[in-house]
Length: 527
Ligand code: HEM
Image (cartoon, rainbow, N blue to C red; front, side, top):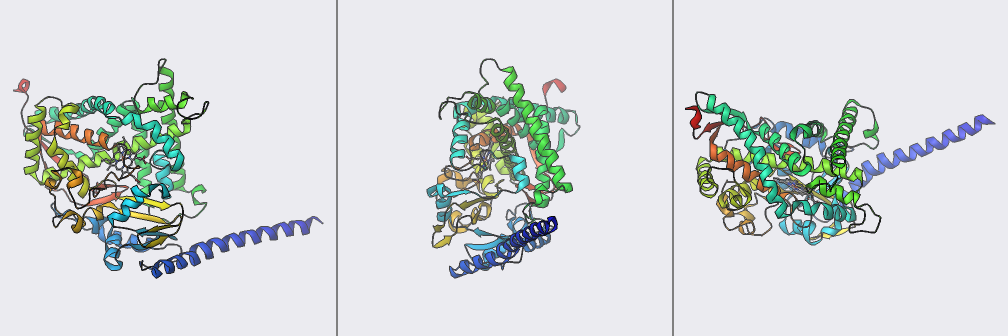
């Protein structure tokens, strides 16, 4: 009697597995993508053909490998054929917009500023963030960058006050003291060297500096405490880069592969370290939690009556841990590359380096700058904006509609990802002018909204309600650090520098940025 029952159960399980496999392999991986491609073609949206399972991934991998050896001239800022050769090629081949395939999922690439404005601003409520690579999720957590809908409103309401201008002004002092430590170290080393100059790998140093700044300003901890978070996130970032083009097979993330085990270990480490930082703050504060970002979030977690319903927790402890991951990463990674690329450009254009130095000495003198002085650095703002246009650390903005949408003349079904590649749009000649490929900070002399044909042309911090919450923080930090470097040193690239920007989640120099810092004045006591 028992044997037939077992057989029936096994047959049922087999039937279930076969139907699942059929639905996954035939419907999701073969039939659906082809049907979607046909629907796009009928609307005049073309692109590379879909390949079973891998979509366009293998073509992208091949084109990137071919382009990887290309090295650019120092004044050649068109690195797009190096880092996104597929996007450039397909834009020429298929026009705009076009569709390509990330595995079995379509990616609709749009380049039209009006459409981008609709997605990010006018109709932003109809779009949510695209699915995130599992390792990116482990690295930055489901914090403000990735939450959507009412969760986003709740998180943003809590976090906003930490970025008010008066708070940022206070934080400038901390930014300046962090920078002072590093610059003092360089100054000492240069003073003792015969040539009064030293070589530093600026990209590495600036990552450590900005990690220190976010640890101190947002979490009230020092770099030593934030160091574990920084290193765990760096390792997760490396795994992301290595697996970026792997097709996500359902269930694969639960298998104990070497990479998954490493990811789990780092995820645990991150969570434990952040829990420790949070517990320390909770334990040491009898009268309030402090008014930095962590304090503001803890207040919202423990003060249950703020805003929402009585008794409702505004942020749970797990949500705070995720926000900490988000802010540790978003708060330092992008700003450090903004600093790095600005140092690169100022080394390549020494006339601008000199102009900025004159401005800094005029507005800030030789002492440490404060927020009011920094707000007067108009030329420096222009250079930073031009750096963000040409070397935007964040490369793509992605969304997907929550219902079927019509965008321009195209029908985009619910859940289909839209990619807005800002570095390509930042080089559109019809928007930015004939010199769009060149470094020309003067285009920003009448402000960011008058630099191009449309007022929202600079997408480096995105636009609309979900634009970067940390943009003023990033600009203040970049200005403080640059002003202090310019006061003390002149700088040039080492002759061996190879110009090869690379996409490692953010835009980075592949071989770092080795620069020579030369002391402008020798300190009196050494003479
Ligand atoms: C040069 C520096 C920076 C650049 C280029 C940059 C770029 C961006 C971009 C493009 C977005 C929008 C992403 C999207 O719409 O998908 C964004 C969002 C965000 N950024 Fe930044 N960012 C920078 C610095 C910072 C800093 C210093 C912080 C924190 C201290 C920060 C925190 C965030 C957060 C939390 C969001 C999500 C905002 C929301 O959705 O409400 N960023 N950033």
